[in-house]
Image (cartoon, rainbow, N blue to C red; front, side):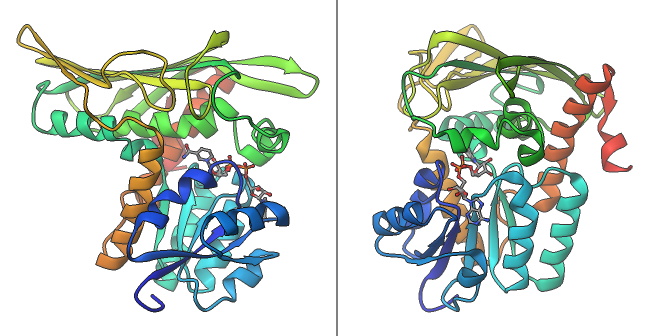
Amino acid sequence: MTGERIGIGFVGCGRISDLQCLGYIDHPRAEIRAVCDLDEARARASAERWGGARVYGDLAALLDDPEIDAVEILTPHHLHEEHATAALEAGKHVSLQKPPTPTLEALARLARVSERTGFTLRVFENFMFYPPHLKAKELIDAGAIGEPLSLRAKTASGRLTDGWALTPQTQAWRMNTDTCGGGATTFDHGYHCFNMGRFFMPEEVERVHAFIHWTELGPNERIDGPALISWKYAGAVPRYGSWEVIASLGMRVRSSYYASDDRLEIHGSEGVLWVNRCTGKLLDEPSVVLYRDGETRAFHDLECDWAESFRLGGIDFIDALCEGRVPAQDAQSARHTLAFALAAARSADEGREVAIAELEDG
Ligand SMILES: NC(=O)c1ccc[n+]([C@@H]2O[C@H](COP(=O)([O-])OP(=O)(O)OC[C@H]3O[C@@H](n4cnc5c(N)ncnc54)[C@H](O)[C@@H]3O)[C@@H](O)[C@H]2O)c1
């Protein structure tokens, strides 16, 4: 740490950096000191918004800055390994956006660099910091639904009327599986949903089956949805999960961010929990609802702005560095989520059920 504060450098000042900065701006022990982006005008605009951070033309120059202690990597997925390796080798801690890498081998290489250099590698997945998800997890851990038995997630994508206007550039690398590492829906967004599939349940996922339809949107442009993915958890108790993606491209989704929303339903041996929103505001319902013993309890007063999950996630990274503890998602935990996502893609490609062990062990 240089001085009283942890100096942060942003690598990539694109769409999501507007939310990713929130936790660092709010944390008394953090300061955004530098940024870099291939698009220099974009980097300058971000630096100005974030209190006059230094602007560098490339990553190497930013990594040479002795006042940068940690970097936030917000570049397309095919660059994650190269950028995170360079940062760790330069003696910086790394917060790397989900999905960490396109392959398990690349993530394992990164984990080894982090171990050898002694600098922290955290993988950032914001759904695990979304306050309604945290509330649902707290209720489950307190036994509110008894033994968790089943998880169902739904993502509804709508037409791009509300929320963010997306640049062609931010869309282009996602629509290309070479730069995204998989489908924009089931790999890029999917990492969140697969992570939620693990977050609430006491066992890891063992087997996966997926239908993923590729919808043609135009010349050289296609999207992986609709999709229906189901899985079985390990352990003696029979537990299943599923995630469905619905492309309702004519439907308005109220949102301040992406034109899509995510909902969860978690059944236990004694009750049911619903989380009714996440990225958007599709349903005008309380964000968390619990059913148990013939009664329904609604939680109306939780912070449910999606941006809050980024703020809390940034704070966790700084707290972890200050306290010398492992952040919420390290490479080991990220490996399970990544294997889950890759198993779904393999299942859809090969038309068969896939065991996670096929990827993790082979
Ligand atoms: N947690 C979430 O919900 C969430 C949402 C969106 C994006 N993300 C993740 O954040 C990352 C960035 O996504 P985005 O939507 O902001 O993408 P984006 O395309 O909007 O921004 C990427 C930025 O990186 C810059 N860049 C590319 N190559 C570079 C290089 N070599 N050096 C410096 N800058 C470079 C681009 O110029 C661009 O400004 C991805 O990993 C993505 O999956 C996470």
